[in-house]
Image 1 (cartoon, rainbow, N blue to C red):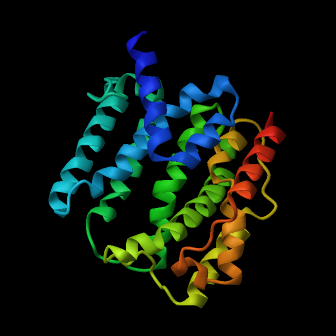
Image 2: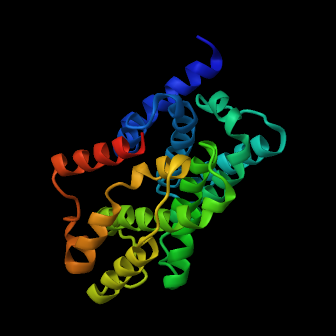
Length: 253
């Protein structure tokens, strides 16, 4: 097995173990598209984990900085990061700058300060979810004309995922929302739903959005009953979740 193939296999294993919903979305995609997505999502997983690797914010930020430096070097010279998934990332050199932006935004995760305001929170979502979804779309061959729509969908997907994480973040003493009042939570959900209303994508851009297949349903629940966010009760049944993914994937084939 070549170094790159072994690296892609390792990346897929990391996504399967650490991000099961995204793993399911990739497996629902055409087989020819998967090799471009495994290392991208594995790198995102490592970046997301880095701030939580230590209870000391400075140490956590140092771990995150390793990824910033490695990805900047990849973007500048094509040099693979010295990591198990590094060889597989070389083919994603053009998307390395977007991953750097994801990592830079994740510095917020290293500390305990709340978001300054709603604008700061929305910027965080765009820099994390927006850049990741756009990197996936680019890796699959989407053109620049799709970026705005991809980022709108990514905002919705990122917000739904963030809402789902609120109870866990609060249990660790974090303040994950700029305004946790029910009316503010509902307004955030409605804003995200408006951004994706009537926006249709096809081809590579649509495939890149498969990991967010649950977002609309979760945001509708949050808009109707924002208390479900704090209760950790946004997810639907497992059957409905998987059926929704399979329907969307079949529609795109």
